[in-house]
Amino acid sequence: MVREMCARLASPFPLFMRRFITFLFLAFPLIALAYGTESLPYTDAPSDRVTAVAVSALTQEGILQGYADGTFRPDQPVNRAEFLKVAMRAHTAEVIPPADTGCFPDIDPAAWYAPFVCSAKRDGIVRGDALDGISESAWRFHPARMVNYAEAVKMLVLAFDLTVPPIKANVWYAPYLAAAELEGMSLPGIAPDHALTRGEVAQVVASFMAYSRGELPILRAAQSGQSSVSSSSSATSVSCDPTICPDGTSHPSCTSGGHPIEYFADPCLTHQGSSSSASSASSASSFTTDPGPDFSQTSSFLRLGTTSSILGAAKIFNNSEPFTVEDITVVFTGTVPSVDQVRLYATADGRYLGGASRDSSDPSSFTLHSSAGLVSMARRVETSVYARAITRGFDQGGASGEDIQIDHFFIEGRGDWSNRRYNQSTIDTYQTFETSRSTFTTIANAGPSEDAFLGGTSRTIGQWRFEGVKGDGRADLKVTDATFALGVSGGVILANVTLGGDGSTDRTSCSVAGSSITCAAIPESIGTVSGGTRIWTLRADVTIPSTSQSAVLQVSLTPAGSVSSAGALTWTDGTTSFSWLAFNETQLQGTFYRF
Image 1 (tube, helix red, strand yellow):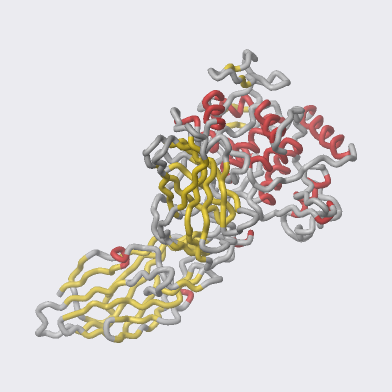
Image 2 (tube, rainbow, N blue to C red):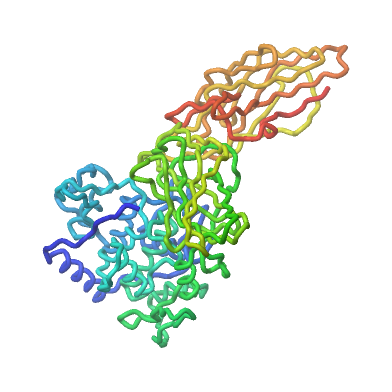
């Protein structure tokens, strides 16, 4: 975790302006928000109500928008520039940038986010990463780095001018997290170094925005499942007695201003889950689980800007005594610059353990540490953890065509009886993955599994359905060459083989040689999968000898290939040319034609 040194400017002017704007909001109320799920024009709207209500509220305000394909992508990580734009727009109706939008050495004055970052610096919300012995003018903002929970909360606390409690702590972010929790705006079960997703950003920003308008109880009521309510609804009287947990800890029931606090989950369970993260959870509400949905452990493409499938798992076993895991290090075979964070989960229940950060001394290693413990193990009972990667977007430094493979896991911890230190390293061989800007989600036979084999001109000898997604607006998803495997018997002769795609009248000629059909330099009008579904149709003049009794034909897009061996298809994402597919070869087989 990288500490983000934020502080207010010494000048009182920004503070005065923020309070003046707050006064304007109170004196002249905004149009009432309807907290519910009405403003969710997305094909992948969040399924959980807490996130859905937050996304709907920020969409209604114009603070959040979806993508051109109609998606919201709630699980996609958010970088610091993106977060600051959302935070600033939630804080003030109009962001007035300073004259100088080159406020940090790594901020391009022409970049879309420059006005938001520089406005935040002017207002004392951010200062950049402090470096000992380096002039403050040389401190960087790191706009492309994924924003973590601690950084996000500190920016929001400063932007919305919350009172920061004067607590003593060994970590810089503790007072800011305490300020958010005191007012009922913390995200339960989220570690300080957790890289926030779009859905989580919506939750925390909506909470701060609602709080600033005196509408937090209304937001919480809508998130808890009550009918959609407007901010003009009247509030009911509540008790402000604190909640006392069985372990003696207490949680406030009201803010300092007398507003009721409604927690996302039982605060006692949340406290237990966060302070004893090594323990097995007794309630589903006390910890965060892996959202999935891809639990496969086979080589595949890692689309930039997303969370990967499972990269590998580590088995943990201690023969001597009960064992508490305090450190998990994932070591890759290379420096993997496209990986921003590694997320670790307990295999038994999918419990999210935390985000492992890149080691400053070894860029190929990512370590997650907790002195309180990550996983508790009984003596002679095997358990395991697994890893997913969050990759940087292509526009945020992610590289297409990068091989990503775990070399080993290194586990460290202490014995519960002896307090002795233990460590172990895995010796498994892990799958290799490859980064790309775009990926195919489906390539499969688009025709029947079997059909009658007929001779004649321009006969269909195979059809395949292609589906895919692009990770950024300038990416391609285009097949440039294809070599089909041809299985034929009974004296059948093929001639004038052509390939075409639906939505275009173009056809390209292909050559037949032995057991292969080669379609080279496929035109863009046929090879491009721009969105939705694309159907390829392979046609040929088919001659079946009149004496043939058992003529058969099957054309397949095989072999699939692998990271290290070429397959039947060559395709590009606009940057890199790939020659393999992450599919089972059975689904790449075409129709089996029998005479």
